[in-house]
Length: 169
Image (cartoon, rainbow, N blue to C red):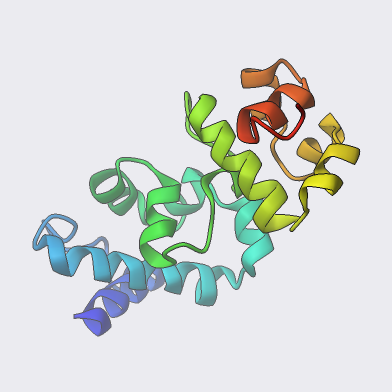
């Protein structure tokens, strides 16, 4: 089915087909997700030719809408760019790495997860490095400035304490 889905998308992009067939996005759920993954990968890798960093910086709803994939994004993924990416590239991206997160995404739990990811996975810092380098700047430089503002009132110590409760005692 992959070949049909991607070929249909190519035809829509080329203008040889006006739109996707009726019920294309709602036909068969198991087929649908693999087709959507293939189409999303085709968009990013072949049409846009974006690398991982460009995806993180540039992808948004408008990317899908302007490339004839509004129906897919809305119907299959409920307007969630992250859900479409996660379907195409499982585990490759974190929601907070993208240029925008959904409204009301940030809460104390997502902030904890993002902070742990930042220091342990992304920066690969140990406890002593974290303690000696606590600053808002680290969060901002790594795309977590909205989290800092919304959840912690720009207080890096609060963010660290939320993620690593025993670290600063």
